[in-house]
Image (cartoon, rainbow, N blue to C red):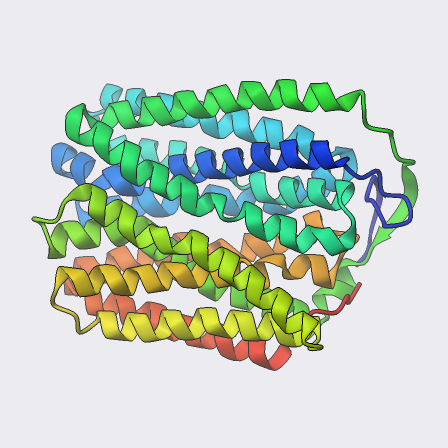
Length: 424
């Protein structure tokens, strides 16, 4: 199967790259957007224990709402990557931002207005699914934009640093969100984060238009062939996809359920500590993973070996910490284990997360979208299944063992078939 398309995909021979000033401004803008998108994404996991208690939602109901986000998240990945490669990532990025900002801002009205209706859980889940669909457009459009405006040697480093915005956004929710929750109410958290996101959307609109006139249009290539059949037949691509999905299972389950875990296991713990401290490890680990990757490559090792080493560090740290977490009894040990697990995601951001640029440098938006679509499946299956496990067994160690087994599968697959060389 091949898809005939008209793409505005840059190659190093015809790339209309950003100037140094433009690169700095776009980096700060995209970093802010990634920060806010994760702040809004993590607002529901932060608030779900309080809202569930107020609305008498069960763990099963909470699982439906938490997992519904990822149903929408999977729907728009491939299409947004393809459209971004064709018409420009910045346009898709703006549409995405408007959608997830608005749905976050108005979510309290949905919850409150239908609070006495028996369909409340499913209506909230539907809104969360729409929010996820808009958020699913963010990273494919971002990586497509990067591929259109940066040379190949700069893309992986630029994108891996942008992913640190996920840690900043989670910390923003943990600090500001916890403060607003303690001093006001859960609805205020949604409104404040939604307002900040709408403000960024307006800035992005101005920011995009201000540079539009300065960008030299690139020649549109007609009849360009995007070889899906060749891509889908390559083991390195599937090892990347499966490894990404397995690591996402760990990340998304903890992202969605960590607040509930501490609420159930250590009810006296302060909210700001629980929701902020574990995420402090992700940013330094992202920079550490980047520095280590550069050092390994400078030492003469291939990109393939480098990606496998960095990704293996991620999986080994996560699996070991998850197994240890099944035995811990103290609050401090639990915080430490979760900090290590989340820190592992920083290494993932410098390995599999940037692998689409290695495997398909001319089609990175589309390929990342496909990878992230499959990678988001654990978002709804893993998060939902974790809620089911808790509902049936009331056992957090069983959930942690489930995550560790999935991580081990991803590690084996990537070690066997992973690659850092272009396959299409």
